[in-house]
Image (cartoon, rainbow, N blue to C red; front, top):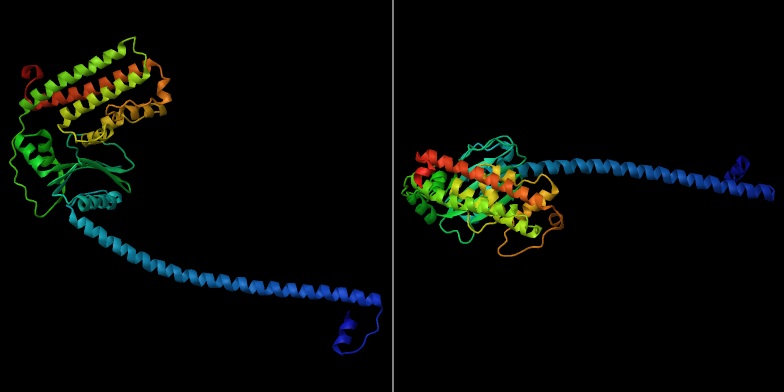
Amino acid sequence: MDSAFDAVKQNKDLEISAFDASWLYEHCKFVLHTIEQLYLSFMEGLKTGYEKLLAIVEQKVANKNVEVAVGNLAAKETTLSNAAASQFHAFPWPDRYEADILHVLAQIRQENNPEQMMLLNYYVSDAHGKGLFHFPAVENEKAEIYLVVIKKKIGHCHFRKIVYGRVTAVVAFMSTDFLATKLDLGSRFSHTIWNESVVVYRRPSYKPTYPVSPINWHDTLFKTSISWTRNSKLMQDLLGVFAFEGLASSQLAVLFLNQLTSIGLYSYLYLRIGYAPMNVTIADLVDWTCICDKKVKEFFTARGDVEEILNAELLKQMKGRIYELPSQLAQLDMDYFRSKAKEITDFFVDLCDQSIRYMELKSEAKLNEVI
């Protein structure tokens, strides 16, 4: 190959055999191919290196732009947060929930144009409200706030749940006329929310001067005790139905449990709070009881799949309809429903009896002295 190279370089003829010429041709092709591959590999390496360097430069520019954008966005969010916070009265919300809570409050104010917003209770993982009706501290992953919103007119919306981020707001709406009337009548609920709740927002032009009559605890005990005497008998009668050996229908048993739950829940709300929002579901009323404590909500927190299905049936708004019973409940033994009926009855009877004893204490009279 060296001789052939020199001959070509000097432009001279070279006498070689046909075999050598063929061998020389093949090896020259191989060398040419190898050189081409080396060249292509070299150029590809240069291209890859250039692209990597270009990507690094572009990333640095992009990061700088993102930092500027994030800084502007953070400044904007801070401005909005400060603007939202300035609309509401100061309250020591936990830092990690404050932004979401202020967002919910701002949403309620914007959508409803209220005269006043009052905080009845709240539950968060590291703090809790003073509790208008007292409750034990409970650990929660999210924040829950319970509000009453006062408006001039409320229309058909008496109750609403709003979820944003890590915050759930349970809101009851009342008209100014309704509140004024109830305060004048000495309503327990109106007194409690008016005197002991936390005002988180009040329209500057809203300056209420409602006449407030004192609560007549003796009269309240008399009225509520009549209602509880009637309702507790209904609950005991329903419990007696479950003791009847002829009761063999799971569908009928669940219907009775649904009614037992409704009677117990409404009785508790009347005795303990004195108010239940209108046009709401049974499940919503369970949420509403949390303005006192979480005993009712925890009672209906399922501990298994079957209990979860049953609780859904117990808290279902029947409205005269009969729904097909889930197969998981249809195959249960009747003793399960009997046990559940006793559990529900005992639970609500205990809560309602506690409320009666509280009113006896406030009225300085015993129930048998009032009736």
